[in-house]
Image (cartoon, rainbow, N blue to C red; front, side):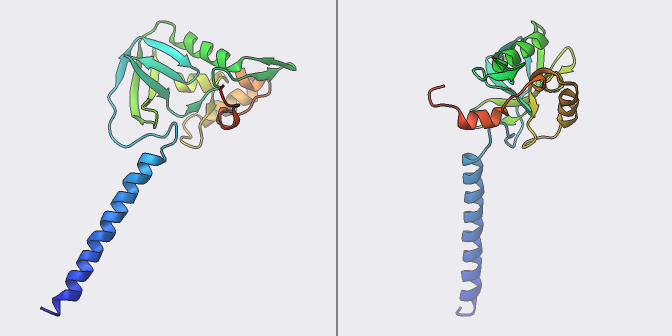
Length: 182
């Protein structure tokens, strides 16, 4: 019996260590998901009429959907063009509304963010809405989470489309320093 004690102690220690690692992993996932980082696991596809919430968020079948891989200016964000401020967040939302324009939207879920929104690639008439927003310059590729639309952003920047026709603060940076109450 005494010779088994070290083996049993070692197994017990291993079991505790595995439990701690699993618990830390679950805890980390619960606390640190980024606003547009996909969570593991399947998310149902959504299909139907869409309502535009802002330049990178739709509501489909009563569910908020954050477009995968892009970041658009916030609704109340201003940018500059020709030396004048303009409501670029509102312009981005209008651009997305034009792409949707009463068409049926099909979204393939990629996960869920910490706010409970479905993260998805959405299409209207076969057009990838995220890519179209970035290509038109009304959103940027959210490279921290995906490189899918980097080439579209490069083209928009080179051609001075949308946001790239003037000066703007990256939406992520703007959110970070947004004045309280806005």
